[in-house]
Image 1: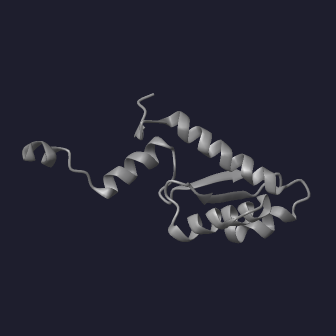
Image 2: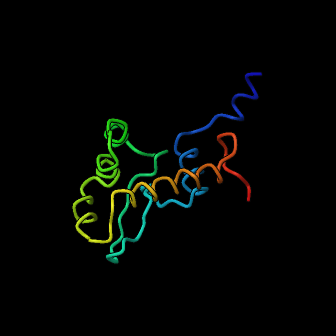
Amino acid sequence: MAEKNRKTRRTLAAVRRKYTETLGLDDEAKVAFDGEDGETYAFPHPLFADDEWSEAFDAAKTTSDKARAILGDQYEQFIAHPEHRDADVMLVFLDVNASLQDELVDGRPTRS
């Protein structure tokens, strides 16, 4: 049994790399999207977000608070455009989560 455990030992670096590749993320594990203003905005993928980002998102009560938590310093630039809404950020976030469900099965990357 001990022999089998050595063969399946994982490293954090390898596991992170496997999931970033499966999810099509860059090395920083950011989700990027283009706004109506032609700018690119990005936020950490929820699987790879640091504790500070996760805590800010979890503490957010309103859609506006959640959008601020998701975009961080980019929020003011994003919301300044007349066609951008807080709900748009939530739509992107929900799309990321839906894609995550499609791409992962039982916590493992799919082989599609």
